[in-house]
Amino acid sequence: MGVVTAAPASVVVRPYAPSEAGVILAIFRAAVRIGARRDYSQEQVEAWAPDEIDFTGWSARRTGRLTWVAEVAGEPAGFTDLEPNGHLDMLYVHPDHHRRGVATALLATAEASARAKKLRRLYTEASLTARPAFEASGYRVIAAQTVQFNGRSFRNFRMEKRLA
Image: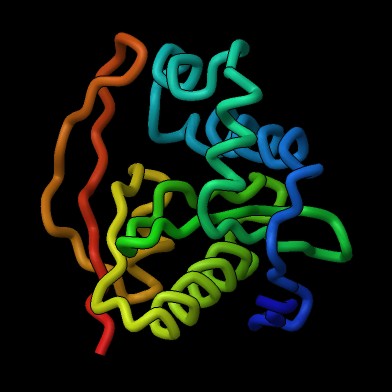
């Protein structure tokens, strides 16, 4: 898939390149450690985005599925991915770019790809922090849930968007 320009015009979404694994990991850590800090405790964000992350596994997950990077002024600002079954595993935006259309542009790109693949729905497990972005893009909550990760409990939401 080529470059996709999404509203606002300052956000450009393009395919991920494997050489960007470190940059994308840094966005993930900032999004969790800074951006999600208002909704989760320090202990939770440290468990969610620990200092030690298997970089090889991280990189393999990005290249093992469709992954897109959103740029603002030519710099990576966020990313998302899409699994073949319509699952969005990750949607992260650097906190410097929150509420500027980055998540909306990434979700629109994933949705366009899903529609092209004739998928009938997209679904995710959205954090407290990400839930409003998903709702603004037409996702609905299926259920609230508490999940365990790295010894911590997290409240999140199973969400979906039906595609016509």
